[in-house]
Length: 214
Length: 214
DNA sequence: AGCAGACCGGAACGATCCGTTCCACTGCTA
DNA sequence: TAGCAGTGGAACGGATCGTTCCGGTCTGCT
Image 1 (cartoon, rainbow over the protein chains, first blue to last red):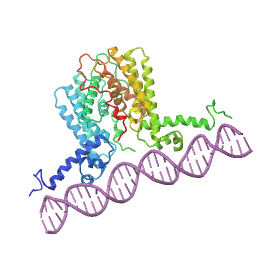
Image 2: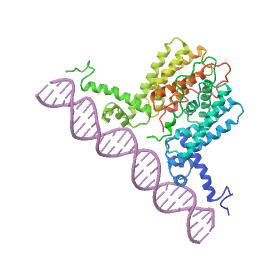
Image 3: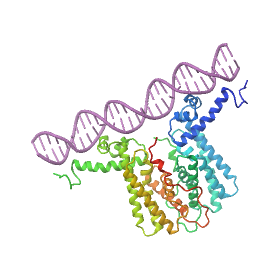
Protein backbone atom coordinates (compact mmCIF):
# COMPACT_ATOMS: atom_id res chain seq x y z
CA UNK A 1 0.00 0.00 0.00
CA UNK A 2 1.71 3.15 -1.19
CA UNK A 3 2.00 5.93 1.31
CA UNK A 4 1.36 9.53 0.42
CA UNK A 5 4.95 9.96 -0.66
CA UNK A 6 8.06 8.05 -1.58
CA UNK A 7 6.53 5.89 -4.26
CA UNK A 8 7.23 7.13 -7.76
CA UNK A 9 5.51 4.59 -9.88
CA UNK A 10 2.13 3.18 -9.04
CA UNK A 11 -1.31 4.37 -8.18
CA UNK A 12 -3.52 7.28 -8.89
CA UNK A 13 -1.32 9.72 -7.02
CA UNK A 14 1.65 8.80 -9.14
CA UNK A 15 -0.35 9.25 -12.32
CA UNK A 16 -1.37 12.68 -11.14
CA UNK A 17 2.20 13.60 -10.33
CA UNK A 18 3.32 12.41 -13.71
CA UNK A 19 0.60 14.47 -15.35
CA UNK A 20 1.98 17.56 -13.65
CA UNK A 21 5.12 17.13 -15.67
CA UNK A 22 3.48 16.01 -18.88
CA UNK A 23 1.12 18.95 -18.91
CA UNK A 24 3.81 21.52 -18.27
CA UNK A 25 5.95 20.05 -21.01
CA UNK A 26 3.05 19.98 -23.43
CA UNK A 27 2.15 23.55 -22.60
CA UNK A 28 5.71 24.63 -23.23
CA UNK A 29 5.82 22.90 -26.60
CA UNK A 30 2.44 24.17 -27.71
CA UNK A 31 2.75 27.79 -26.64
CA UNK A 32 6.30 27.97 -27.95
CA UNK A 33 4.94 26.99 -31.32
CA UNK A 34 1.98 29.35 -31.15
CA UNK A 35 1.59 31.81 -28.29
CA UNK A 36 -2.14 31.99 -28.76
CA UNK A 37 -2.88 28.34 -29.15
CA UNK A 38 -6.13 27.19 -27.54
CA UNK A 39 -5.93 25.45 -24.23
CA UNK A 40 -7.48 22.35 -25.72
CA UNK A 41 -4.36 21.97 -27.87
CA UNK A 42 -2.28 21.64 -24.73
CA UNK A 43 -4.56 18.97 -23.34
CA UNK A 44 -4.50 17.06 -26.59
CA UNK A 45 -0.74 17.25 -26.86
CA UNK A 46 -0.38 16.05 -23.30
CA UNK A 47 -2.77 13.21 -23.98
CA UNK A 48 -5.06 14.21 -21.11
CA UNK A 49 -8.50 15.70 -20.75
CA UNK A 50 -9.20 19.34 -20.22
CA UNK A 51 -10.15 18.71 -16.61
CA UNK A 52 -6.62 17.62 -15.83
CA UNK A 53 -5.55 21.12 -16.82
CA UNK A 54 -8.17 23.02 -14.88
CA UNK A 55 -7.47 20.98 -11.77
CA UNK A 56 -3.96 22.41 -11.75
CA UNK A 57 -4.37 25.92 -13.09
CA UNK A 58 -7.04 28.49 -12.37
CA UNK A 59 -7.32 29.27 -16.06
CA UNK A 60 -5.37 29.96 -19.18
CA UNK A 61 -3.89 33.14 -17.84
CA UNK A 62 -2.59 31.33 -14.79
CA UNK A 63 -0.96 28.66 -16.92
CA UNK A 64 0.66 31.23 -19.17
CA UNK A 65 1.91 33.16 -16.18
CA UNK A 66 3.55 30.15 -14.60
CA UNK A 67 5.06 29.15 -17.92
CA UNK A 68 6.51 32.58 -18.40
CA UNK A 69 7.80 32.75 -14.87
CA UNK A 70 9.40 29.40 -15.41
CA UNK A 71 11.17 30.80 -18.46
CA UNK A 72 12.35 33.75 -16.44
CA UNK A 73 13.81 31.43 -13.83
CA UNK A 74 15.59 29.46 -16.53
CA UNK A 75 17.03 32.69 -17.85
CA UNK A 76 18.36 33.52 -14.42
CA UNK A 77 19.77 30.05 -13.90
CA UNK A 78 21.56 30.11 -17.25
CA UNK A 79 22.95 33.57 -16.55
CA UNK A 80 24.24 32.53 -13.15
CA UNK A 81 25.85 29.44 -14.62
CA UNK A 82 27.45 31.56 -17.33
CA UNK A 83 28.88 33.97 -14.77
CA UNK A 84 30.76 31.03 -13.23
CA UNK A 85 32.77 30.69 -16.43
CA UNK A 86 36.20 32.25 -15.88
CA UNK A 87 36.72 33.55 -19.42
CA UNK A 88 34.79 36.80 -19.86
CA UNK A 89 34.02 36.46 -23.54
CA UNK A 90 33.19 32.76 -23.29
CA UNK A 91 30.77 33.53 -20.48
CA UNK A 92 29.00 35.99 -22.75
CA UNK A 93 28.80 33.78 -25.82
CA UNK A 94 27.98 30.68 -23.79
CA UNK A 95 25.13 32.50 -22.15
CA UNK A 96 23.61 33.58 -25.43
CA UNK A 97 24.03 30.16 -26.97
CA UNK A 98 22.26 28.45 -24.13
CA UNK A 99 19.42 30.93 -24.00
CA UNK A 100 18.88 30.61 -27.72
CA UNK A 101 19.07 26.83 -27.65
CA UNK A 102 16.54 26.60 -24.85
CA UNK A 103 14.22 29.04 -26.64
CA UNK A 104 13.83 30.91 -23.38
CA UNK A 105 13.25 34.20 -25.12
CA UNK A 106 10.04 32.97 -26.71
CA UNK A 107 8.96 31.60 -23.38
CA UNK A 108 9.27 34.96 -21.70
CA UNK A 109 8.90 37.88 -24.05
CA UNK A 110 6.42 36.41 -26.50
CA UNK A 111 4.10 35.32 -23.74
CA UNK A 112 4.17 38.65 -21.97
CA UNK A 113 1.12 40.82 -22.26
CA UNK A 114 -1.24 37.86 -22.13
CA UNK A 115 -1.48 37.92 -18.36
CA UNK A 116 -1.07 40.27 -15.43
CA UNK A 117 2.36 39.69 -13.91
CA UNK A 118 2.97 39.07 -10.23
CA UNK A 119 5.33 41.22 -8.23
CA UNK A 120 7.61 38.24 -7.78
CA UNK A 121 8.01 38.19 -11.54
CA UNK A 122 8.92 41.83 -11.37
CA UNK A 123 11.66 41.04 -8.89
CA UNK A 124 12.94 38.19 -10.99
CA UNK A 125 12.92 40.35 -14.08
CA UNK A 126 15.03 42.89 -12.23
CA UNK A 127 17.45 40.23 -11.14
CA UNK A 128 17.64 38.91 -14.68
CA UNK A 129 18.57 42.29 -16.03
CA UNK A 130 21.24 42.70 -13.36
CA UNK A 131 22.80 39.41 -14.37
CA UNK A 132 22.66 40.35 -18.03
CA UNK A 133 24.37 43.64 -17.23
CA UNK A 134 27.11 41.79 -15.40
CA UNK A 135 27.66 39.54 -18.40
CA UNK A 136 27.85 42.48 -20.78
CA UNK A 137 30.21 44.30 -18.46
CA UNK A 138 32.54 41.34 -18.37
CA UNK A 139 32.33 41.03 -22.14
CA UNK A 140 33.35 44.66 -22.41
CA UNK A 141 36.18 44.04 -20.00
CA UNK A 142 37.45 41.28 -22.24
CA UNK A 143 37.86 43.82 -25.00
CA UNK A 144 36.14 41.62 -27.54
CA UNK A 145 32.77 43.35 -27.37
CA UNK A 146 32.28 46.54 -29.35
CA UNK A 147 32.31 49.45 -26.90
CA UNK A 148 29.07 50.91 -28.27
CA UNK A 149 27.06 47.80 -27.46
CA UNK A 150 24.73 48.14 -24.47
CA UNK A 151 22.84 45.59 -22.39
CA UNK A 152 19.61 46.25 -24.20
CA UNK A 153 21.20 45.06 -27.41
CA UNK A 154 20.87 41.58 -25.97
CA UNK A 155 17.15 41.94 -26.48
CA UNK A 156 17.68 42.64 -30.15
CA UNK A 157 19.97 39.65 -30.51
CA UNK A 158 17.60 37.26 -28.79
CA UNK A 159 14.69 38.58 -30.77
CA UNK A 160 16.60 38.02 -33.97
CA UNK A 161 17.32 34.41 -33.08
CA UNK A 162 13.80 33.69 -31.88
CA UNK A 163 12.49 34.98 -35.19
CA UNK A 164 14.17 32.11 -37.01
CA UNK A 165 11.64 29.35 -37.26
CA UNK A 166 11.18 26.35 -39.52
CA UNK A 167 8.85 23.38 -39.03
CA UNK A 168 11.60 21.08 -37.79
CA UNK A 169 12.73 21.91 -34.27
CA UNK A 170 16.28 20.60 -34.58
CA UNK A 171 16.82 22.46 -37.83
CA UNK A 172 15.49 25.58 -36.19
CA UNK A 173 18.14 25.22 -33.53
CA UNK A 174 20.86 24.92 -36.16
CA UNK A 175 19.72 27.96 -38.07
CA UNK A 176 19.46 29.97 -34.88
CA UNK A 177 23.04 29.09 -34.03
CA UNK A 178 24.06 30.30 -37.44
CA UNK A 179 22.16 33.52 -36.90
CA UNK A 180 23.78 33.94 -33.52
CA UNK A 181 27.22 33.36 -35.02
CA UNK A 182 26.65 36.18 -37.49
CA UNK A 183 25.38 38.46 -34.77
CA UNK A 184 28.30 37.67 -32.49
CA UNK A 185 30.60 38.48 -35.37
CA UNK A 186 28.92 41.84 -35.69
CA UNK A 187 29.04 42.42 -31.96
CA UNK A 188 32.76 41.78 -31.82
CA UNK A 189 35.30 44.54 -32.04
CA UNK A 190 36.48 45.09 -35.57
CA UNK A 191 39.47 47.16 -36.67
CA UNK A 192 37.78 49.65 -38.97
CA UNK A 193 34.08 49.67 -38.40
CA UNK A 194 31.68 52.57 -38.26
CA UNK A 195 29.93 53.08 -34.94
CA UNK A 196 26.51 51.53 -34.65
CA UNK A 197 23.88 53.94 -35.94
CA UNK A 198 21.17 55.66 -33.96
CA UNK A 199 20.66 55.94 -30.24
CA UNK A 200 21.15 52.55 -28.58
CA UNK A 201 18.09 50.77 -27.24
CA UNK A 202 17.19 52.37 -23.93
CA UNK A 203 16.28 50.75 -20.65
CA UNK A 204 12.59 49.97 -20.57
CA UNK A 205 12.16 50.51 -24.25
CA UNK A 206 10.84 47.00 -24.60
CA UNK A 207 8.68 47.12 -21.50
CA UNK A 208 5.55 47.69 -23.56
CA UNK A 209 5.38 43.95 -24.06
CA UNK A 210 4.82 43.51 -20.34
CA UNK A 211 1.97 45.92 -20.15
CA UNK A 212 -1.37 44.40 -20.86
CA UNK A 213 -2.30 44.46 -24.50
CA UNK A 214 -5.28 46.69 -24.88
CA UNK B 1 -18.95 69.63 -65.03
CA UNK B 2 -16.05 67.19 -64.63
CA UNK B 3 -15.46 64.81 -67.45
CA UNK B 4 -14.75 61.14 -66.85
CA UNK B 5 -11.01 61.77 -66.72
CA UNK B 6 -8.44 64.47 -66.40
CA UNK B 7 -9.83 66.00 -63.24
CA UNK B 8 -8.01 64.94 -60.11
CA UNK B 9 -9.94 66.78 -57.48
CA UNK B 10 -13.69 66.96 -57.61
CA UNK B 11 -16.64 64.70 -57.85
CA UNK B 12 -17.64 61.26 -56.79
CA UNK B 13 -15.24 59.57 -59.17
CA UNK B 14 -12.33 61.42 -57.68
CA UNK B 15 -13.39 60.48 -54.17
CA UNK B 16 -13.54 56.88 -55.21
CA UNK B 17 -10.12 57.07 -56.79
CA UNK B 18 -8.75 58.67 -53.65
CA UNK B 19 -10.30 55.92 -51.58
CA UNK B 20 -8.42 53.38 -53.65
CA UNK B 21 -5.22 54.87 -52.33
CA UNK B 22 -6.39 55.50 -48.80
CA UNK B 23 -7.65 51.97 -48.39
CA UNK B 24 -4.49 50.38 -49.69
CA UNK B 25 -2.38 52.52 -47.42
CA UNK B 26 -4.56 51.76 -44.43
CA UNK B 27 -4.44 48.06 -45.21
CA UNK B 28 -0.68 48.18 -45.39
CA UNK B 29 -0.41 49.97 -42.06
CA UNK B 30 -2.88 47.73 -40.29
CA UNK B 31 -1.68 44.37 -41.55
CA UNK B 32 1.93 45.37 -41.03
CA UNK B 33 1.09 45.98 -37.42
CA UNK B 34 -0.94 42.81 -37.04
CA UNK B 35 -1.12 40.26 -39.85
CA UNK B 36 -4.39 38.90 -38.60
CA UNK B 37 -6.19 42.12 -37.92
CA UNK B 38 -9.89 42.13 -38.75
CA UNK B 39 -10.97 43.73 -41.97
CA UNK B 40 -13.07 46.23 -40.06
CA UNK B 41 -9.85 47.64 -38.61
CA UNK B 42 -8.69 48.52 -42.10
CA UNK B 43 -11.94 50.28 -42.88
CA UNK B 44 -11.79 52.21 -39.63
CA UNK B 45 -8.20 53.26 -40.17
CA UNK B 46 -9.04 54.38 -43.68
CA UNK B 47 -12.01 56.31 -42.39
CA UNK B 48 -14.41 54.55 -44.74
CA UNK B 49 -17.17 52.01 -44.39
CA UNK B 50 -16.79 48.32 -44.91
CA UNK B 51 -18.65 48.52 -48.20
CA UNK B 52 -15.90 50.64 -49.67
CA UNK B 53 -13.60 47.72 -49.07
CA UNK B 54 -15.82 45.01 -50.47
CA UNK B 55 -16.52 47.06 -53.55
CA UNK B 56 -12.81 46.82 -54.42
CA UNK B 57 -11.77 43.42 -53.17
CA UNK B 58 -13.57 40.11 -53.41
CA UNK B 59 -12.78 39.42 -49.78
CA UNK B 60 -10.08 39.47 -47.18
CA UNK B 61 -7.99 36.90 -48.93
CA UNK B 62 -8.02 38.93 -52.09
CA UNK B 63 -6.91 42.04 -50.28
CA UNK B 64 -4.11 40.20 -48.53
CA UNK B 65 -2.97 38.66 -51.78
CA UNK B 66 -2.77 41.99 -53.56
CA UNK B 67 -0.99 43.56 -50.62
CA UNK B 68 1.56 40.78 -50.57
CA UNK B 69 2.02 40.91 -54.31
CA UNK B 70 2.55 44.63 -54.00
CA UNK B 71 5.29 43.97 -51.45
CA UNK B 72 6.90 41.48 -53.78
CA UNK B 73 6.95 44.06 -56.55
CA UNK B 74 8.53 46.58 -54.24
CA UNK B 75 11.18 44.04 -53.37
CA UNK B 76 11.93 43.54 -57.05
CA UNK B 77 12.02 47.27 -57.73
CA UNK B 78 14.41 47.90 -54.85
CA UNK B 79 16.64 45.05 -55.96
CA UNK B 80 16.77 46.32 -59.52
CA UNK B 81 17.60 49.80 -58.31
CA UNK B 82 20.32 48.41 -56.09
CA UNK B 83 21.86 46.49 -58.98
CA UNK B 84 22.33 49.81 -60.78
CA UNK B 85 24.77 50.88 -58.08
CA UNK B 86 28.29 50.46 -59.42
CA UNK B 87 29.96 49.52 -56.13
CA UNK B 88 29.31 45.86 -55.39
CA UNK B 89 29.28 46.07 -51.63
CA UNK B 90 27.30 49.29 -51.56
CA UNK B 91 24.69 47.70 -53.80
CA UNK B 92 24.34 44.89 -51.31
CA UNK B 93 24.12 47.02 -48.18
CA UNK B 94 21.95 49.63 -49.86
CA UNK B 95 19.51 46.95 -50.93
CA UNK B 96 19.18 45.56 -47.42
CA UNK B 97 18.81 48.99 -45.89
CA UNK B 98 16.01 49.94 -48.24
CA UNK B 99 14.15 46.67 -47.83
CA UNK B 100 14.35 46.95 -44.07
CA UNK B 101 13.29 50.59 -44.05
CA UNK B 102 10.27 49.89 -46.21
CA UNK B 103 9.31 46.91 -44.05
CA UNK B 104 8.85 44.91 -47.21
CA UNK B 105 9.74 41.67 -45.52
CA UNK B 106 6.74 41.85 -43.23
CA UNK B 107 4.57 42.67 -46.20
CA UNK B 108 5.57 39.53 -48.03
CA UNK B 109 6.67 36.73 -45.77
CA UNK B 110 4.44 37.42 -42.79
CA UNK B 111 1.35 37.61 -44.94
CA UNK B 112 2.10 34.41 -46.83
CA UNK B 113 0.05 31.40 -45.93
CA UNK B 114 -3.10 33.42 -45.46
CA UNK B 115 -4.12 33.15 -49.09
CA UNK B 116 -3.62 30.96 -52.14
CA UNK B 117 -0.96 32.54 -54.33
CA UNK B 118 -1.39 33.22 -58.04
CA UNK B 119 1.05 31.87 -60.59
CA UNK B 120 2.11 35.39 -61.38
CA UNK B 121 3.26 35.71 -57.81
CA UNK B 122 5.23 32.54 -58.30
CA UNK B 123 6.97 34.08 -61.30
CA UNK B 124 7.69 37.27 -59.39
CA UNK B 125 9.03 35.32 -56.44
CA UNK B 126 11.39 33.53 -58.80
CA UNK B 127 12.55 36.79 -60.31
CA UNK B 128 13.05 38.23 -56.83
CA UNK B 129 15.28 35.36 -55.83
CA UNK B 130 17.30 35.74 -59.02
CA UNK B 131 17.90 39.40 -58.26
CA UNK B 132 18.87 38.58 -54.69
CA UNK B 133 21.31 35.99 -55.94
CA UNK B 134 22.87 38.55 -58.25
CA UNK B 135 23.30 40.95 -55.37
CA UNK B 136 24.91 38.31 -53.20
CA UNK B 137 27.18 37.24 -56.03
CA UNK B 138 28.37 40.79 -56.52
CA UNK B 139 28.89 41.16 -52.79
CA UNK B 140 31.02 38.05 -52.88
CA UNK B 141 32.93 39.45 -55.81
CA UNK B 142 33.70 42.55 -53.80
CA UNK B 143 35.48 40.38 -51.29
CA UNK B 144 33.73 42.00 -48.36
CA UNK B 145 31.13 39.28 -47.87
CA UNK B 146 32.13 36.19 -45.94
CA UNK B 147 32.55 33.35 -48.44
CA UNK B 148 30.33 30.98 -46.46
CA UNK B 149 27.30 33.26 -46.71
CA UNK B 150 24.62 32.09 -49.13
CA UNK B 151 21.62 33.84 -50.66
CA UNK B 152 19.25 32.23 -48.22
CA UNK B 153 21.03 33.97 -45.39
CA UNK B 154 19.30 37.12 -46.59
CA UNK B 155 16.09 35.62 -45.32
CA UNK B 156 17.59 35.26 -41.88
CA UNK B 157 18.84 38.83 -41.91
CA UNK B 158 15.53 40.28 -43.00
CA UNK B 159 13.68 38.17 -40.48
CA UNK B 160 15.95 39.43 -37.75
CA UNK B 161 15.28 43.04 -38.64
CA UNK B 162 11.54 42.56 -39.04
CA UNK B 163 11.46 41.03 -35.56
CA UNK B 164 12.48 44.35 -34.04
CA UNK B 165 9.32 46.17 -33.15
CA UNK B 166 8.42 48.94 -30.73
CA UNK B 167 5.23 51.01 -30.60
CA UNK B 168 6.76 54.01 -32.32
CA UNK B 169 7.30 53.47 -36.04
CA UNK B 170 10.22 55.84 -36.45
CA UNK B 171 12.03 54.38 -33.47
CA UNK B 172 11.44 50.94 -34.90
CA UNK B 173 13.21 52.03 -38.05
CA UNK B 174 16.17 53.27 -36.06
CA UNK B 175 16.50 50.10 -34.06
CA UNK B 176 16.23 48.00 -37.19
CA UNK B 177 19.05 49.93 -38.76
CA UNK B 178 21.12 49.23 -35.70
CA UNK B 179 20.27 45.56 -35.91
CA UNK B 180 21.18 45.56 -39.59
CA UNK B 181 24.48 47.26 -38.85
CA UNK B 182 25.39 44.50 -36.40
CA UNK B 183 24.34 41.83 -38.87
CA UNK B 184 26.31 43.42 -41.70
CA UNK B 185 29.31 43.50 -39.41
CA UNK B 186 28.89 39.79 -38.86
CA UNK B 187 28.38 39.15 -42.55
CA UNK B 188 31.60 40.93 -43.46
CA UNK B 189 34.87 39.12 -43.90
CA UNK B 190 36.89 39.11 -40.72
CA UNK B 191 40.53 38.12 -40.38
CA UNK B 192 40.30 35.28 -37.87
CA UNK B 193 36.75 34.07 -37.63
CA UNK B 194 35.41 30.56 -37.35
CA UNK B 195 33.24 29.41 -40.22
CA UNK B 196 29.53 29.80 -39.71
CA UNK B 197 28.15 26.72 -37.96
CA UNK B 198 25.76 24.14 -39.37
CA UNK B 199 24.58 23.60 -42.92
CA UNK B 200 23.59 26.91 -44.51
CA UNK B 201 19.91 27.57 -45.10
CA UNK B 202 18.87 25.63 -48.18
CA UNK B 203 16.81 26.77 -51.12
CA UNK B 204 13.15 26.35 -50.38
CA UNK B 205 13.71 25.81 -46.71
CA UNK B 206 11.47 28.73 -45.97
CA UNK B 207 8.85 27.80 -48.53
CA UNK B 208 6.59 26.33 -45.89
CA UNK B 209 5.36 29.83 -45.24
CA UNK B 210 3.91 29.95 -48.73
CA UNK B 211 2.00 26.77 -48.38
CA UNK B 212 -1.43 27.19 -46.88
CA UNK B 213 -1.49 26.92 -43.12
CA UNK B 214 -3.46 23.86 -42.20
C1' DA C 1 -34.13 69.05 -64.88
C1' DG C 2 -34.36 64.53 -63.59
C1' DC C 3 -33.20 59.96 -63.04
C1' DA C 4 -30.39 55.66 -63.03
C1' DG C 5 -27.08 53.88 -60.69
C1' DA C 6 -22.30 54.14 -58.72
C1' DC C 7 -20.81 54.56 -54.29
C1' DC C 8 -21.01 54.47 -49.48
C1' DG C 9 -21.90 53.70 -44.17
C1' DG C 10 -22.85 50.55 -41.00
C1' DA C 11 -26.21 47.35 -38.86
C1' DA C 12 -27.15 42.51 -38.86
C1' DC C 13 -26.23 37.64 -39.63
C1' DG C 14 -24.15 33.36 -39.37
C1' DA C 15 -20.18 30.72 -38.74
C1' DT C 16 -16.32 29.66 -36.06
C1' DC C 17 -13.46 29.47 -32.23
C1' DC C 18 -12.30 29.07 -27.46
C1' DG C 19 -12.34 29.42 -22.37
C1' DT C 20 -14.69 27.46 -18.85
C1' DT C 21 -18.04 24.63 -16.48
C1' DC C 22 -20.25 20.47 -15.46
C1' DC C 23 -21.23 15.75 -14.87
C1' DA C 24 -20.73 10.95 -15.07
C1' DC C 25 -17.23 7.60 -14.28
C1' DT C 26 -13.05 5.22 -12.50
C1' DG C 27 -10.21 2.97 -9.31
C1' DC C 28 -7.15 4.21 -5.38
C1' DT C 29 -7.02 5.02 -0.48
C1' DA C 30 -8.19 4.70 4.07
C1' DT D 1 -16.21 -1.26 0.95
C1' DA D 2 -17.36 3.64 1.01
C1' DG D 3 -15.89 7.86 -0.50
C1' DC D 4 -13.48 10.99 -2.99
C1' DA D 5 -9.45 12.77 -5.67
C1' DG D 6 -8.67 12.67 -10.29
C1' DT D 7 -10.26 12.44 -14.98
C1' DG D 8 -12.33 12.65 -19.91
C1' DG D 9 -14.88 15.16 -22.75
C1' DA D 10 -19.47 17.01 -24.03
C1' DA D 11 -21.83 21.24 -23.78
C1' DC D 12 -22.46 26.20 -23.01
C1' DG D 13 -21.99 31.03 -23.60
C1' DG D 14 -19.48 34.75 -25.11
C1' DA D 15 -16.61 36.92 -28.31
C1' DT D 16 -14.81 37.69 -32.83
C1' DC D 17 -14.95 38.32 -37.60
C1' DG D 18 -15.98 37.77 -42.59
C1' DT D 19 -19.61 38.82 -45.43
C1' DT D 20 -24.09 40.36 -46.92
C1' DC D 21 -27.61 43.62 -47.33
C1' DC D 22 -30.27 47.70 -47.27
C1' DG D 23 -31.28 52.50 -47.06
C1' DG D 24 -29.42 56.80 -48.29
C1' DT D 25 -26.56 60.28 -51.02
C1' DC D 26 -24.90 62.57 -54.73
C1' DT D 27 -23.03 62.49 -59.57
C1' DG D 28 -22.81 62.34 -64.25
C1' DC D 29 -25.31 61.59 -68.27
C1' DT D 30 -29.43 62.36 -71.14
